[in-house]
Image (cartoon, rainbow, N blue to C red; front, side, top):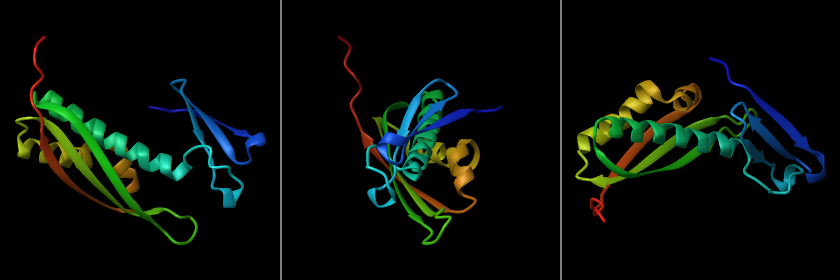
Length: 148
């Protein structure tokens, strides 16, 4: 499977770039002011971290839905540390999941998170080459929706 992406620098903005993904979507990124950017969009490494959170959250939701669990929400709060010198790779990433739903089985939620990290999440598998990746979770109960 191949993926493509085209990056275009926007010279008038300083150090902003627009990526056009293979699926036809646009994503803007910019640098910090001290690096010539104007803080117009997220930094590239912020996008990497955000993509990692979405990748694993997607897995968790899909695994729970396929198991017919009444999942209603999934939030992932990521905290990270990066190397002090170039290349400033991620060295530690912690993902805290807040999963909400109706009568969610704690073992099923735990297993969904484990499966994401052990088998399915390409982003965490890739970043685990340089970073220690840890995770925690909590479950928040929500009421089943009422039929109108």
